[in-house]
Amino acid sequence: MARAVRGPGRWLWRWRRNPLKRRSDRIESWFLLASWALTLLIAVAAGAVVARSVGQELARERAEWRRVEAHLTERAPGTPRDDLRDNRSDHVWATARWTSADGAPHTGQIRVPAGSAAGTPVTVWTDREGRQVTRPTTASEARFRASLVGVTAAVGASLIPVAAARAVRRRLEERRLEEWGAAWARLGPQWGRSTS
Image 1: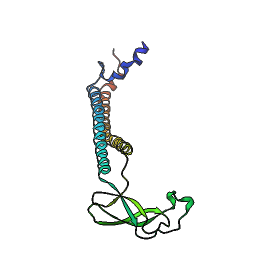
Image 2 (image 1 turned 135 degrees about the horizontal axis):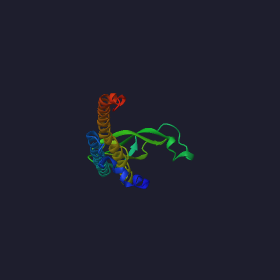
Image 3 (image 1 turned 60 degrees about the vertical axis):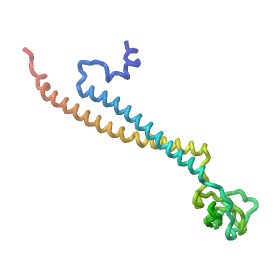
Image 4 (image 1 turned 90 degrees about the vertical axis):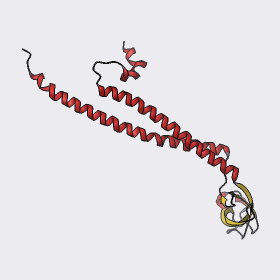
């Protein structure tokens, strides 16, 4: 018999018939079920919408941003070090100039190896207007970033119905305690009396 209590039926105890179950218990059980369903629905919807939006924006960037060859306008500060040529810590900021697709000249700061000569070709990523941007994300990086932002949005959005459900359940518990207090005030004094 003890196994039956521990079995799958114990998860449904809120919906079993019981003569001692009050109206507030029934309301709370259905409210709990509805709040979990609503939380799940909101979390999935928010996560999917945000992940899709981020994914589309990153795909647009990949499609529109272009790699352009720029040239340093001046010698980069510092001295070149052959042994650390590929080390990013040996890179400095220098000014480069490039031409956008419409022929407009642009300049901007870019990280280059220290001591690079003026006129050295460097790669710059630009948007449609020729303004300098960061390197666009790869498809796999975009999927990971969209998923991460989507999960964060889902968790954040689910906090709202969870907080609301907790507030309602707290109010139901307060009301239940008030009902118990009223019942005790009515029946408690009768316990001391004899029945004869």
